Length: 291
Image (cartoon, rainbow, N blue to C red; front, side, top):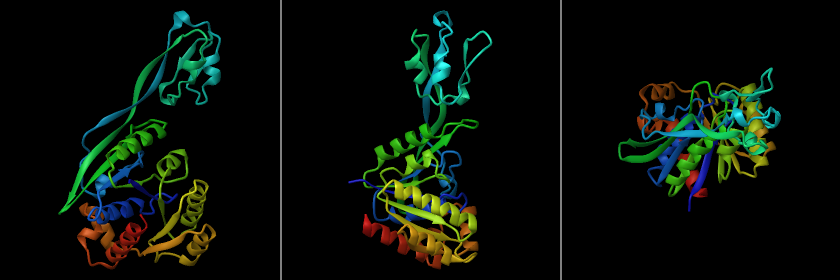
């Protein structure tokens, strides 16, 4: 049976992707694993793994086209569009702004005169890459939003669906920062949420937000404190205790992690005996025990 684990954290730059690629490398030694990078606005798991994006598939959404000879200028399409993608000109003719359209089809169904037809628009892509690190092999699925696009959920959904279709045993998800709806989509159905934070005021603020979201979704959460030596970790413990989330790892600030970024090799592979690698190995073992 497939199990899903999500790495998230609220605040950007806390090290979610670092934790995700290292856990993926370790767990893939024991289980068949698919890693899904659902941070579609800034996916970087492939960079940290020194892997190329391959097997591109477009993500399309519906784009309305107005059949003006049928249009009676009733304005219903503009009224039901909740993203402001359809506006009315001075002549009361509807005009579509593609970049604002979410593809929800509300205008298509609401038009009483069948004056709207369905078109398509590509807003992003998904990729499937086979990652090989020595004898360890796993699949990386990456979602990428096209530059300038407004709507991330369709790309997150498409990448999640592709990853789920490939996962035989375990799916590990790397979400984007924040607590918006696309993060909720990424977290949905997770057996375990690993919330990565740092002991800073903004890190604590966003940790509380993501733990509240996880709690609302009814998901079990663990906390990983990255750069644990740069601040007061006792405040992180207070927030975690408030949401019944236990702290399972404390990762100190380290030059070796930066070096692993530059080389595109996870630290657990580059320096397997490093204290951070040992901490991540213990975390991977604990995760495997609960799934």
